[in-house]
Figure 1 (cartoon, rainbow, N blue to C red):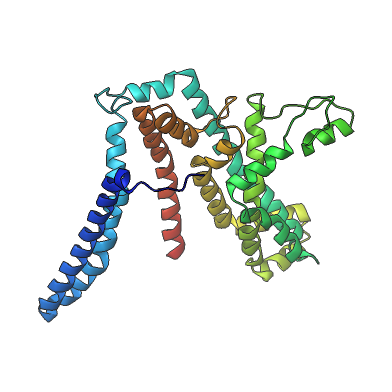
Figure 2 (figure 1 turned 135 degrees about the vertical axis):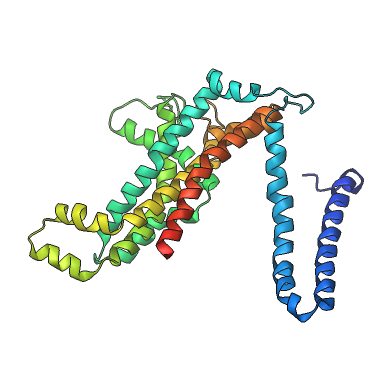
Length: 326
């Protein structure tokens, strides 16, 4: 492995970094100087400015400027040299490969939040106040400690395929062969392969849903539970008429959180299939177009579209939190 670092080649980038650090320090020094010379009445406002200005500066440099630049690039050609208008967005909704990406993203967003919430809720209800509750929750939460890349590698081995005459190293195909079946290439056949990738996401996130929903269930007033039992409510009636309505806000939190995370999904698809075999999603295709194929305009258009999809969910979550505080 070549660990040599060419300072001459990297000099422009290092100079840009140095300029940024100097500019940031200059802004902070200027604000401190103004605060020192300001009258007492104005010091409170300057205190606020000093606290906010560095953060606002970094926010502008690291978020606002790149967002504006990405939006402009989405209306330009792949090399960023000419203006193409809405051509990149037309490509996104008309070309078969791009439509497949949007379809896969829709499948992920439609299934993952619902499955994660359902699995987490059922698990939380089943282990609630059981003898081995802490152990059961620890086991289901363990995958949360694994990165998406690590989980993708693990499940790639689970789905691994070998010819029928060879010894199977994939757990799933080993089970199929043991039951007298034929080994399958699980990640090659669309659209079923997308469902097998979704299983990985559910496996990782089910622990998060379990912890959140279990805490919400424990927060249900005991008087309500006892009153329902005295009225002769069955376990099923208790779940749908008492438990579920009482933890509605927690369920919404899990659904919204998982929806945002699923829209941004990249690691699992990149690790397990690389987006091949019709499994690509928006974030993965954005990477491919911008960094592998040199189509900066198309990659930027996908990034803008992803931002548009995430924004309403984020706004809804902010409103829910404000209502909860009130």
